[in-house]
Structure formats: structure tokens, C-alpha cells
Image 1 (spheres, rainbow, N blue to C red):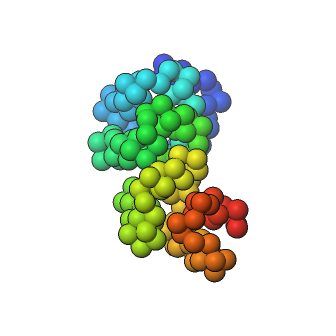
Image 2 (cartoon, rainbow, N blue to C red):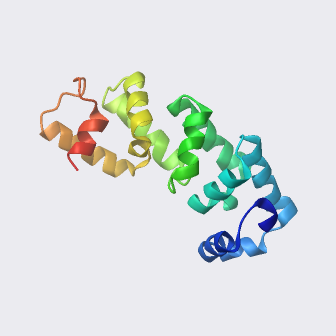
Length: 166
């Protein structure tokens, strides 16, 4: 980790969260993840920040977890630059399951709430955490918005209303 730009405090922080990282094979498990992050265009300091802020990143499989999350967030946010901005700063950003949270929430908003893809995209771009909450929480927020009489196709987007009623 030192060779990747981590200082002692950063190493202690990451290892205190996930001590089993010390047991990982450097060449097979860790080096490919650092290379993946470099290939995304992250600098050494960006990689350190991203790993410190996304403590589980080194435990994810590149092809089964990281690439699908990256592609999903790129499609939602519209650009890799936006994805990387959030990824470097948000501790939750790459931790949520695409299959268990993101896709069910997108499907619910589109299919059950009738919110067009463009509006969902607008909400996610301004508040990406909105789409990554537990599906039950999102459903409860929609119920609350309905109880308040807010039409789903009104000028006030569902996401903005839901955040203001918490």
C-alpha cells in the first residue's frame, strides 16, 4: 500500500476497517484493483482518497462488482467525470448493490410511479444517494409524497419533494 501512495495513517485506517486485506495476494488481488483505478484516470492521491472513502473497494471483484457499478453510475450520471467526482468523495458511492438497490429503485420509479427516465436521471444527477437507498425507504417516501398530494408529474420532482419531507 505504501508503494501505491498510502501513508501510515491511511494504511492503518484501511486495515482497521478490513484486517483481512493483509491476507490478500498482492499480485492477484490488490495490484489489479489499483491498476483498474489508474486506468479510470485517477491519480495516486485520488486512488488513496477513493480507497479510504470506499473501504470495501479492495474487496470487490473487478468484473463482477466494480465494472457493473461503474457502468451503471455512468449511465445514470451521464459521464465518467461525474462518477469519479462522487467516487472520490462519497463513502457510500460504490458500496450499494446494483441488483438489490439501484435496479429495483429505478424500476419502481419508472414502472410503478410512471416517472420518465429523463426525470429520474435529473433527480439522480442532483442527488445520487436518492437512488441508492433501500427500496423500502424509497417506497415509503413515495407514499409520503402521495399523502401530501404531490402529483408525480408536477414541476417539483419526486426526489426533491422526498428530500424536503424527511
